[in-house]
Image (cartoon, rainbow, N blue to C red; front, side, top):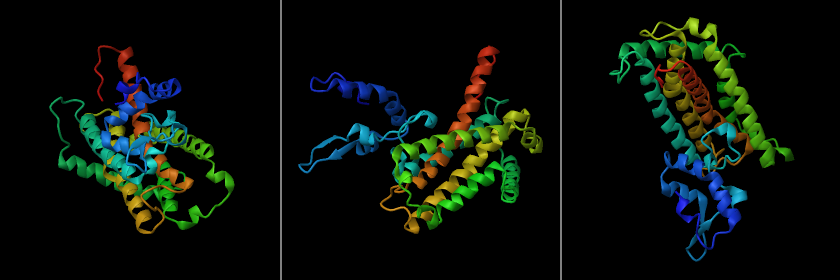
Length: 281
């Protein structure tokens, strides 16, 4: 996106180095967001009507392709973009679920209605059961969503809460822990053995199908509902996450991507070892 400006004669070398450092992130975001979106976030208008880049160390408003490697979460503090991410992820997981279901059929471009009905019925029952089990990883996620619409969550005025590095550190730690718990749950025999039989899928592929459908049909829908509630109640003002505790919304929004990326990488490693078996998804 900005690669043509790297050799600009007036560009300071340190800024050129910083731009090069984030070029991969910018390229990845350019696949999701328009150039106008990115320019809006990365520039600021001057009194004379001209635009200049925002101070880089203060607010480089990008989000790395891998949330676990990201040092900045400013991009999704803007709820318009957080919502756009959630809606795009719903579509991605919808396509992913179809691809998983069609593993044994290259011509499969949809999941039959009766199969979807059975999958959704199972997921609804899973959600009902999770609300009665405080140790269930899904209960933990739902509980966090409940706390985010409670005004009491934002009444803690301890100084360390407003430390940006501390908040980002908590975000990364929470994402790593939640990611590991969800991965372990999806791989667990308790979960795979509880699933109804779907097509000719192996147990682990069936588990990923149910997870993908859960994200598409339920999870991101819940997140979007919570964002609406927080806006309507006045907790979110000016379409911006204005309290460090709200970073949890970003953590939750990135979680499915991080979980599924683990399985995709695992599948690629397996396929590499067992060539010429094709990469399935």
